[in-house]
Length: 69
Image (cartoon, one colour):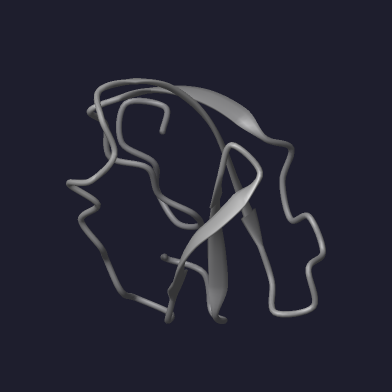
């Protein structure tokens, strides 16, 4: 989470983690495959449109993005 505020990581419509600003989290329990990824703020607002990501991958919010993620 390279954003300046707390964000929820939403995978296939389910909040799987809350990330503080500047934090990173590894989710080994997610199997390799394609998922819909989105980020939301504390109030549940969509900050960006969901996008499909094929895991394993690094997914970031805010700042520079690596490899389009």
